[in-house]
Image (cartoon, rainbow, N blue to C red; front, side, top):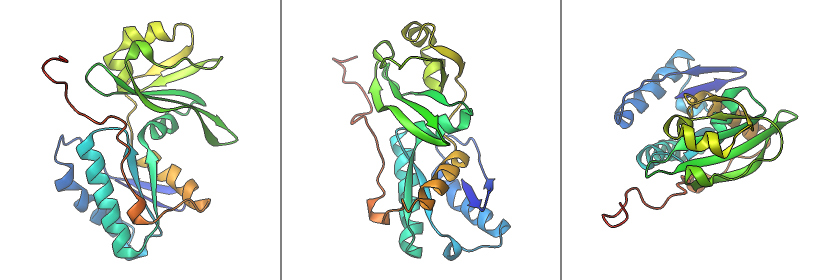
Amino acid sequence: MALARGSAVDVREENAGRQHSRLVLGMIDELLAVQGMRAADLDGVAFGEGPGSFTGLRIACGITQGLAFAGDLPVVGIGTLLAMAEATGAERVVSCLDARMHEIYFAAYEKSGGEWRIAHAPGLYAPVEAPPLPAGDWFGCGSGFASYPEELARRYDGRLAGVDPDVRPHAREIARLALRRFGRGGGVDAAAAVPIYIRDKVALKTGER
């Protein structure tokens, strides 16, 4: 969880497996209390819209809608792969999350004038079929590079200036990106806040395995 106020972003995080639904409301209360705020003082609510864990995305969206409906607040969904690109500090980024089932969630972004441009929109691919990249050096990030290092290294041979497989979607970058979106009037009604799953199933059938 993160609370952005002006240029400062306060963060609470815990690697707690599948306990996020139990912890998240307490983190929100703590962040607000430290800043001397109430939920009614918020100007907008942002969430990681996906792709990612189906359960995690639903919880994030549900909490966001609850806060937004209660306070009549605008909502912004920020892509998890874009948040990863923001976290790297690089300007040409390939974001890859391990999607299990020998697939990756993939996107590529380029930054120009402080704003991100989509080079390849988020999609689901086998690592060996990841989309080609425009010319130039790129920085790779995310768990996809940890799970499929050889396949992605071959796919992007000579195109990656560096790789950090430990980069993950984080509320800190989601908050920062959301501030820019809100500043451009990009907030939407809470009812329009929906997860982006990309994949429509979470397990292979016996025959497919």
